[in-house]
Image 1 (tube, one colour):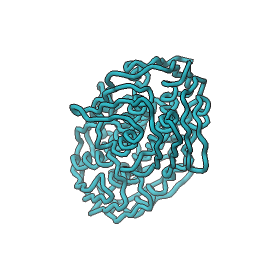
Image 2: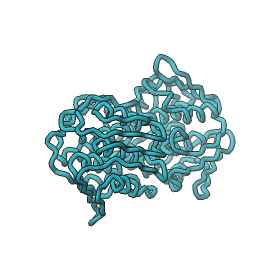
Image 3: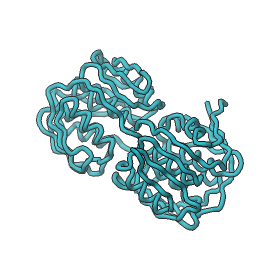
Image 4: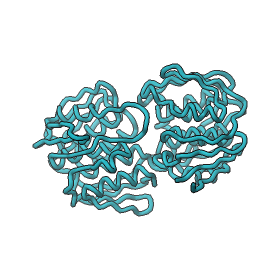
Length: 417
């Protein structure tokens, strides 16, 4: 097991490459199941979740090979239609294989997923979609059992906007008979990227990235070559790191059009951000201004940036309020941030942060992926040394974070314990 050790107080400067988006890569990896043959995904990040999902595909019978930042996935030999508990329990995204397996092979057996320790994120939306498309679905002994002759296009109204359910519906509909219409669909850039991939594979997909998505299923789909979009959450995290340290950093390949709500709040807090030659240049202020933030589905402020923004606002001169509307109990980072000197009070899904002049290093423990990032950010400005335990969480979503931050001037290292 590793820990990350940070000596705070270094101003970040320079340039950093933004990796491919994990939240785009995982559903696109699942989508390769829909077509027999060899697909290539480019700009795939080196992350634990990507590695785990590759193992899920291998268990199904696919051949998965990594060459640098590319994944070559050959699905022509898939014959085992079960995603086992041993793998699925470690990440919720494993449920992405459910729709593609059912659509292509007419059956699937997928363990109920695991993943982050916070929040109920039930799979009922995924199951309802498949039932509305004609599948017989039941849960037995901790497994989702699904069967269908041929999935049928359907009108699907989402009670709540769900990225995972939208992605699964789009993939299942791509091989269904007839037309499928999704209303109140998730609008995230990762959904738009998946729609572009499914269109390249031969399905007719329109509206991906909007609230209404229409899919005309194809009889068969073909293997493709697709590039993963840059990770907007990783970019947002480095934006916060730059702002907190009063630094100046160029984020290579970061896309401003995917970061509108984050950029707006950063600017409101006094951070300077500009586009330059296809990159984003971020410059931290002399002092941060308090702001109020409410998380909401894209294009609103992302829940995946809530913890990092709490770290940022801990240094603002005044009081800020964060209201978490997506996952109301997503505050496991609060006790550990308090150990570093962050002044925050919680009332249900509302956090009130009172800015302090300085933070102080301490041993802390990460509880989930974004909590890990928030602790690293706070450690960058804390006086003295901070040790962050359970950093395997951060490896699920950030590629070589300590190396990238060290390249910007941070005093940070990974230590085997």
